[in-house]
Length: 116
Image (tube, rainbow, N blue to C red):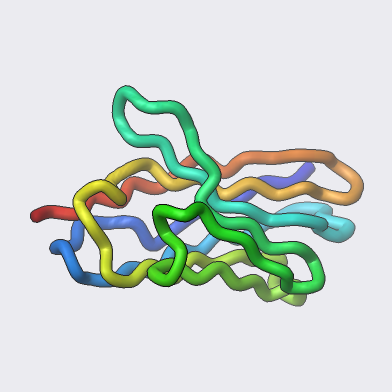
């Protein structure tokens, strides 16, 4: 089996930065696309950023130019560098990975709170 564990969330003032990490553990056998989602209270979970195994990226319009997704295939990890944070970025952030053997898996989520 495999699992994803996120870390790096916390409380930050508007304009500040945070870096989220998500690492896969267990019998990984390779990962295709990795993504970050977020879910704010009372709202649906939304896709924030995507990175392919080859490093191709895509971002939601709301975070374009402020957030950067990256990955380390050797460590089976994905990262989200979040700069110029806004109160509307407050949410629980989840990583998602498409495992070549295990299929699609979610992490448990990490809370990001941006104060105004």
